[in-house]
Image 1 (spheres, helix red, strand yellow):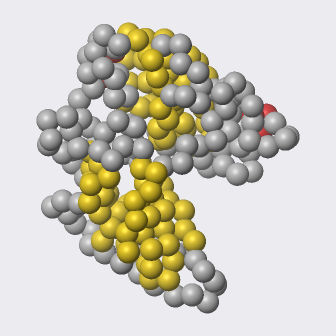
Image 2 (cartoon, one colour):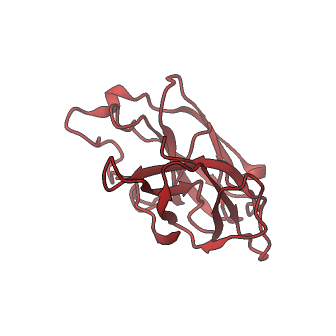
Length: 215
C-alpha cells in the first residue's frame, strides 16, 4: 500500500469574505451561522445554524486584524471548535457553512475579537472526511484522500488499517497536511485513525475507527 503525504489545500477562501464560489451567489442557498460565542476557559468557539443538511463548517482564525484568506482554517461537522490559541494573544474568529457542491458556502460570520486567557490543552481530533478516485469503473482499486480536524499548528499521527482496534502508533504528519492512500481494494473496508501530538511530545487519544471504503 503506497502512502503519500501532501499539503492540505485551503478551501477556496475569499479575501473579501463575501464572494461566493460560483456566479449564482451560492450564499443565497446556504444560511450564515449566527450567535457566535467564545468561552475563555477552553478557547471554545460555538455558533448556531438553522438549516440542516450536508456539509460542514469552516472556522478561520488569526491575529487580530488579519485579512480573511490569510488566517488558519479548520473544519468540523460540529457546532463548536476548541481553538489552539496562546495565552494573552488577541485573535479574530470567523465561521461559515460549507453546504456542499450544489449550495456552495455561506457568508463568513464574524469577526469575534477575543483575548485568549490560556493556552489550549491537547485534545484529540473529532472529525474526518475523505474523497475517493479510481482510474476506471472496471478497476479493482481506488485512491482515498483523507483530511481531519486539524488546528493548523500541531503535528498528527495517522494510521490506515483493516482492524477496528486503536493502533499503538502511526505515521507522523505535520500541520496543514492530509493523507493520500493509493491502491486500496474496492472490496475491503479500511479504518482510519488519527491523533494529535501535544506540546510536551505526548499524544492525544486516537480518533477512529473512521471507515473508508469504495461503496
